[in-house]
Amino acid sequence: MALYEHVFLARQDVTAQQVEELAARFKGVIEANGGQVTKTEAWGVKTLTYRINKNRKAHFTLMNIDATAAAV
Image (cartoon, rainbow, N blue to C red):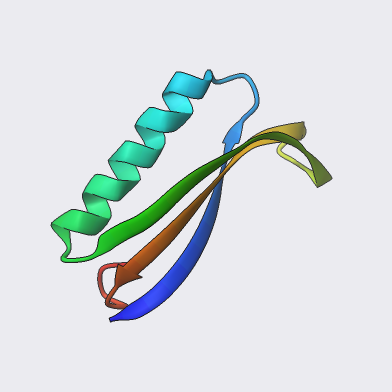
C-alpha cells in the first residue's frame, strides 16, 4: 500500500469539535475501503494565502494515510 499525506481545510466558523468529527468521518471512509490512518494532526486556524470562497482563514488538519489508490 502507498503512503499519502492529506491536508484538509474546514471553514473558520466551525468549532474544533466539528473539525474532529470531520476527521473521524474521513477516517471511517478510509478504513471502510481497506486503508488505515496512521496519524491525524490538527494544525488549528491559519490564515490562507489566497481567499477561498470569501474566507481568509481555515482550520487545517493533516492526515497520514496508508492505503491503496482505490481507497483514497
